[in-house]
Image: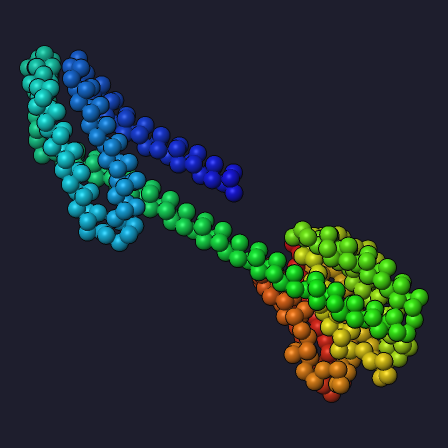
Length: 360
């Protein structure tokens, strides 16, 4: 952000330098084309006029546009801007009179001789007046354009920063909800194990501690590796299998050769957790089939599991904060780069999830 602001300031400085370089050429190079020895009073007059234009430019940019034009006081702004242009014209005429510049220029042109002098002259005519008014309007207009564009860019950047902060805060909140959700559900499973087999429960606690290190430390960054996410899913499945009976069939198919890529952490777990929560039974035959595939940057997660009716009459309502938060995280992190299809085949008694994620 600091680098972007520094570059923006540098670009602004360069634009201002170029603007005044162009106007400087107009004011201080044009007299050199007269092919006469112009009096030094002309340089004084041009310097004063140039200074007035500089003052008008920055007075308009830093005061008039922010206080009036950008606050929808367009009428007052136009009145003041036209008054500034009129003041520049009047002061320019006064400087001509004060320096006696008209007479001095006439003398300079007269020295060119009668033939060369024909058609030349330095007098206050409508062309010079219109030229000065046009130059003043041009300077004020350029200042208005630059200030308005910079204000629009600043407002756009502020809006983007606020939106980014909002998204970051929401993502942190969602992930903070998912982590305790996983932790407490797993603790409940381990508690059930302690009533059945103490040795198995100790093994489960050790495995849980390894998984929690991933949850608490490895997922604190915005991204993790695909291989780490898959390894975490495997650990979770292994932990869940400790309390399952032979009537439950668990299958996991993951890539043997993996092209590791960065992804948001804890995206797969809620879907896997949902399958264990609603798809297995201690007494009824049930199954969970999990397939993870990769095709270049596309990663697919497919989960099919039986529907155990007594555990949840409505899977969408019973999915808890895990699935809901994961949907929201996908919306925020991968807009337009993922598809999620969830089907409940009531006749076949199967619940199916198909997630396609583009990690490019």
